[in-house]
Amino acid sequence: MDSSTASGVRSAVLAYSMWGGFTAYWKILSGFAAAELIGWRVGSAAAVLWLLVAARSRLRHVGTAVSSPEVRRHLLGASALLIVNWSTYVAAVTSGRVIETALGYFLAPLITMGLGVWLLDEHLTRVRSMAIVLVAVAIVILSVSYGRLPWIAVLLGGSWALYGLVKRRVALDPIESLTGEVTLLAPIAATVIVISLVRSGGAGDIAQGADWLLLAGTGAVTAAPLLLFAHAAPRVPFTLLGPIGWLVPVINLALGWVVYGEDMPGVRLIGFAMVWVALVAVAAEAIRDRQARQRIERREAGALQ
Image (cartoon, rainbow, N blue to C red; front, side, top):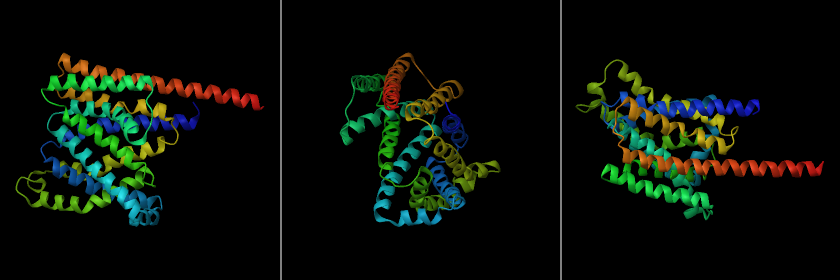
């Protein structure tokens, strides 16, 4: 592993660890309404991200891109999915369903595969077909365990997979794209923040001392891992970056089960285990295929010398 890749891996591990660990940050804010927390997150993230864009001397570039009707159309789609994902996640964490958020982010890459087949006419290998079947069975088992469809997990995983699909059409890097997305959401967020300050039982009524720092800091905790991820993405092979991303649901699972004492009956654990088997199988196949391609490239390079 060269120094550039090693640097990217360190950044990726730290970014995903932060994304997972920040669940505890939102848990601390459980006394506030989830809608208010999303308003504060979007508003403060917009301020932090525009400062980052300015520091990178990209204000004009982002402003021009956001003013383009085509780019703005894709950003609107991404921002709608983003607000669904953030709202579901924050509402789940603050209502004591952290384990279900972990399941959602375990499901996300597998749902992404399904979207590739359904919408992009991609073809599944036998391993990936078996993985999707395993996930379908796992969802049935988990539905029995919960006594309902694990809708939080499905909504989280589905919205995140669709978000990634839409982001492919935005000609901006991750930081600039998110800046445009939260900017489009900023007027709604500002309205929510004002309401939270004046309504009875809102942030203005119940927040004390450090609460204000935590509310204002929601933008920083949104931007910090994104910066690290932006550094990692071009340096780390996706076959490695994908498995590193499992740190997020692993941390969430540990927090929900061990720290917050959420229930994990045996049947539910079986459902999770089937999802893990599917993920490991897909990752192993991706790594094997990459190694095979590298061997072919080395042989071809040797033949040309």
